[in-house]
Picture 1 (cartoon, rainbow, N blue to C red):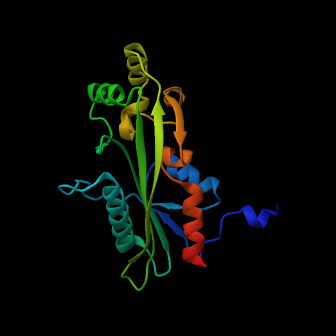
Picture 2: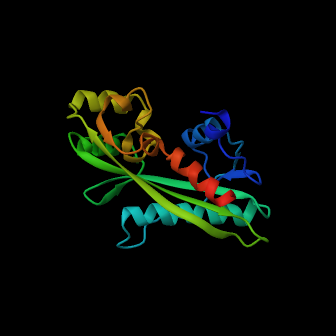
Amino acid sequence: MSETSTSAPSPRAHLILASQSPRRIELMREAGFDVNVIPADIDETPIPDESPFALVERLAASKAQAVAAAHAQAGEIVLAADTIVTVDGEALGKPADDADAHAMLRRLSGRTHQVATGVCLLRASGGVPAVQDVFSVVTDVTFYDLTEDEIEAYVASGEPADKAGAYGIQGAGGRMLVRGIDGDFYNVVGLPIAEVVRHIRALTA
């Protein structure tokens, strides 16, 4: 297979990543993009009766629109994403404290849950950004049965502190919790990079 066929497309304009997530930045750079990182500051409060999957798509679109309106030049591509962990139809965000992290991990222990990432790609146009492409990817993740000692040690490591659902599958401790996944591994990390690249290709074709 030729190098051309596997390399990321060159955006027509500089790509802005509306996220300060180290994991998303790394994935985009590894895919060959020189991203300009401009985090979004939006209200992430769920709408009453909003499903977790609708929530991540709405938040991704809101982040992209906010950053594009404030920073994007005509023709620039803005990428935003939002990832949640959901179990029993309820979204689990980042833990408020260690006790919250313990409770989340106990709830996920021995069960299958879903990780959903909403993605928005848009191209700025004449100062009036328009949403071009919004989609979501869902991955099933199954945990081992976790002992209290395992949960305690993992929380004490500090790894769960800034992670939705109180774990990071790419971390040294988090990967030891997971018995299996069904779907895109990188979606669980925080960005379904292969799917994103394909959508960027379609948007910039």
